[in-house]
Image 1 (cartoon, rainbow, N blue to C red):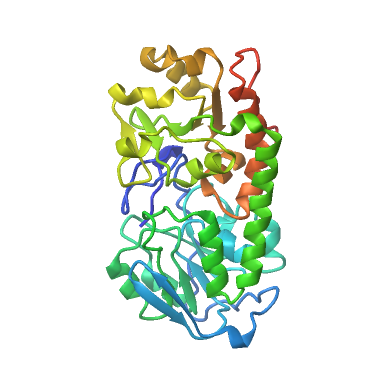
Image 2: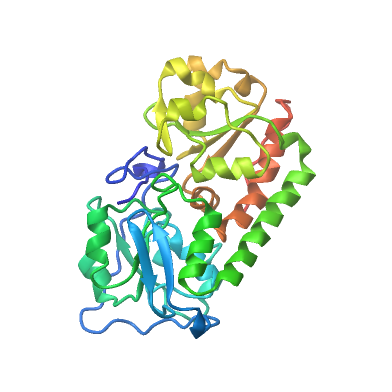
Length: 358
């Protein structure tokens, strides 16, 4: 199942039909799996030590043992491919979400392909992973970390390869990028490499936070104009990006959002949008901004009059990266988002919040 928002905006979808986010589900392109023989495995940059295996990983549906170093990884999780690529393995197949990138490999991750072929891209049509086409790729590991697969889907996929489902500690599609990277590292027998990758991105966050002490403690929310006002909760990956930069979520945010990554709020709770900084992901940086500002309820808020808004275009590479929130996309996002936040948080409407030029 996958969550995403059709048309480019985050749909509070669910584990089955709605695409979840401030961006729309991908183009729906699909690369057909080979009929007879599966493509050759993509060789990892560095093979995992043989003595690491077998490894056992706990998850929502129990535990999975991986007997040997995987070489043919399929990623059911919508962003799991970034963690796998960062660890030196090119997946044989990926799951389409949005962005329209070949093989679901964004520009921030493309150099990790090297000379390997682009992964086979399959779509989740709302009924779950395409089991037969995944099986045709002959994977020896299936990762479903940033995912929402059901127990039935897990059991079906497990008939032909070890499956690591989403962790039970988090909502579906709620795994933090750090945990996603570390679990991928454990599954691939590369714990040390995964830890180093996480530490590197955490250091980049820490540096940005130190350079901008005005971020610390300032309240912020991430929203999108889907079905009115759609606001993301504290467990959503985009909200966590702001938290990592020092921002705080409204104290009653999750009370309103509930046990999910986000929801469309009532107009009576539109006050959630009037924070020190409000980050909007929008399909159109002109039309959608104008529509929001023409809305009497929102347009009269101080967050608007004081120029404390950040707008991220969902269809841009930056917009897609902002919603991916992975060990590879985050450095790309931090370089673009931090200048926008710094311009917005000063509360001076004369300070223009510029869009990234690349």
